[in-house]
Image (cartoon, rainbow, N blue to C red; front, side, top):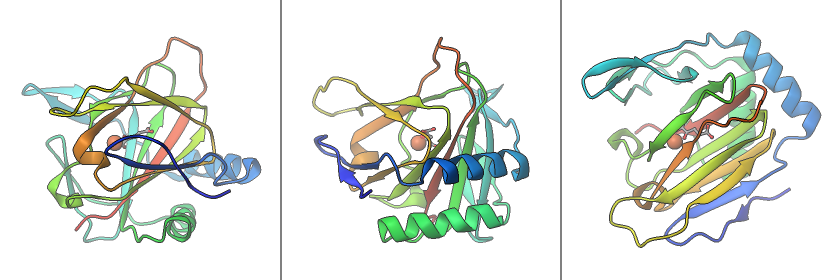
Length: 196
Ligand SMILES: O=C(O)CCC(=O)C(=O)O
Ligand SMILES: [Fe+2]
């Protein structure tokens, strides 16, 4: 299936809900669960170290160093599964990526708060390609500071889906992966990025 442009003002958001066929999505989900060195990292919140409510990993080319919420992350090397996914994502988007941030949401209580991926290392209008595996969770978007009001947007991201954020999306919008009270299995998300 092709990537389809979603109608959101001041954003370029494209979705292919079936980027990977179900069997391939399930296979790579299991492979990543078993082969990625998952860690729970602290972040600094108002000067205090707090554990992130999810597990993470950071892989990429050796030069793709990244500062994220007060952490300086050294990338781990590409694994065969990550290399394959990077190649497939590049073919689908026509873009090159030198790193990938992985997030593992173990239960509905794991989450990611409101933010924009607007770190200087990503450049002004970055392309970020997000692959989702495992349980379907709802991804949310809301206008950033200084933007015209807009109702919050919710997007269910099924396993094997590819969501592309590019153009002004990170300058104009924020996104989050909220907790859910529903009982859900683990979800794994990969955001392919280009660190400049
Ligand atoms: O889990 C998701 O879908 C979002 C992850 C995200 O926003 C990020 O890694 O910056
Ligand atoms: Fe993000």
